[in-house]
Image 1 (cartoon, helix red, strand yellow):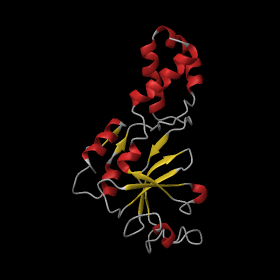
Image 2 (cartoon, rainbow, N blue to C red):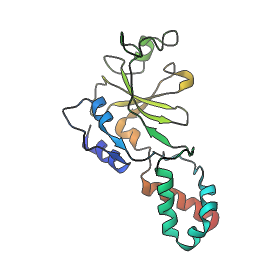
Image 3 (cartoon, rainbow, N blue to C red):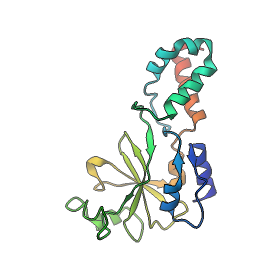
Length: 197
């Protein structure tokens, strides 16, 4: 992976210390750890009103602490559905003979149809992100012609691999996610407009 991609991943909360030039894309992706969820720049402030109501005294008295708690809450593991995306690292090899996924798409989509959209010598994939939205799965082809900055493809569980979209390069794809600072700025703008301060 390019240095610029690693820098973006680090800013988004990934630990990339085990990534190395000697590893494949899949090995590098699986060697990373994410310490938090991801929120895209189209995120719609899910749950912010409820968080504000529970913490409005802190918002009014100790505004800085309010935002520290907000980041801690939204970016740590929890059971709340806030429109966040999740780092994933599982392989999906539906066209590889005798793999655990062999035949999983049989009767739904043919390899030739997938090849109309996906670039690569073999149609083997790694899921890199799961989302609550539509589409809900983002994959990279393991034999992408540019393993340093592969193309990201999306599909949804409702039309799994029957509909695939090219989401652009990994570098461009990662640009859709907010850093913690950008997240705070979005929430501040929303709360200040709604409640003042």
